[in-house]
Length: 583
Image (cartoon, rainbow, N blue to C red; front, side):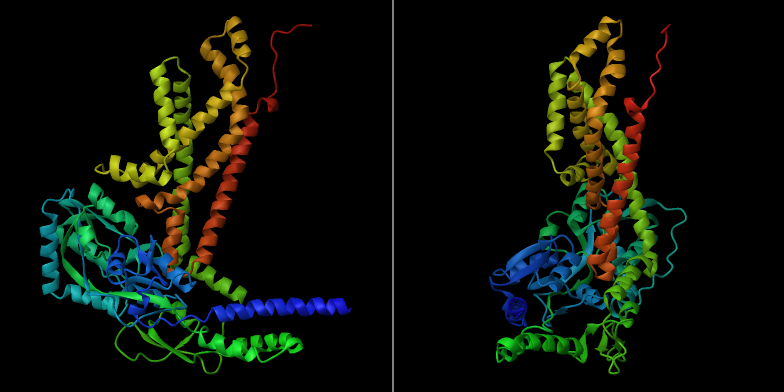
């Protein structure tokens, strides 16, 4: 009994010490200025190739920089304490907080000077004098007050209502425009509908130009390459005209100026409060230690650190479900956020939080339709890539088996090159390079890329399986009068298939999962759709888990289908019929 008590005491003491160490280590210096971050001790997140990267390099050169391919990833890294600051557009970060991003705040001062947001012009646009036409349109829209009205509606007041813009009945040309689809309020999805300031600007320019409009969705790190390759005519995506970007594409006149700010982690609940807890606990000894931990823990759960929060918060339907809002204290999208004094608003439990996550991911704005569309594209690419890849792989296998040395050498080199190249790099070479100036569907490019990649691996599996069949069987078949073709397809290949099909099945499932990178070439597959939803909900865990579960389910269904086909094709399951045997 004494030993059990000592063990229990030591266990509680150990966990308590670890907990106290966590509180003590949480005593970090509160970040209150940009100048404070210009220090090697701090880690700054920057968007890849964006204005934030340019500004951070210029004004925060001493800090350690980490590059993120999307702003949503940077936001989450800040909220989880993985970064000390994230450099990005102030307006978009304010909208992220208003949309539900928690545990962060934005420093009051801006980073550097304002920078022009402009329309990027492709050097290979099929529309003559596009830059001059864009500038003419912008000048007219500014003079008429259209751009000011748009900025007031979308940004200042956050109304989020797309006006009716009639499409040209007899267009003179086709205008291909690149945007992101993940940046509220400029280009984002409401359910399955693309909307925002930039989207309205696209349709207004298309109507002014009397052009048929086609919008393509890219990540920021791929949209410049798409314009360079001529896949799109221009970019309208809250794009800053940085010095680096001007070296690659042209820009129109300024649409509106933007300012860069720094997002840091909110200091609520850490630092001073943690120090006070530590000092209080250090006054107690041995036997009273465990009781104190439980008491302090209960107290922390019952008390609320802040009664009100003022942080440029916008009223959204999803936030109103969790907290009460005071009346607006200035004419903007930002209001004062307060705690319900009566205690009506309380933190949700696990299952209630799970229900909220399910609602925001699937139900709100009909986002399940977006997920269904992405899933359909993923399955489409996977199935067709598997079929075409098998056919092409068989052809490569036959090339490797010919007696012609140059042909064998070509097949071997081709397979090695494809196997040694990351699939995402190969896709981008196809899309931005080989098919850069060709009007071709992104989905078709993805199918071509994955078919070739799958063919390289499947050909080697087939060749290895064929080589495992005893050559004596081929010699015997030829001696019995079979042709080479009959020998191969009736005797050798069926036996080889038994050996390579199980491995081929695993490679096909790997290919299905690898299709998650097609978002790099503007395909809205399941993973890309998950990114779009995360950019709206500001929640990483649930959308990612949903995506993982869907991929798991798809992979298992396809595995079951392939296993069924394998069993049906197995010679052991087929009844042998012997003809011409008499008793």
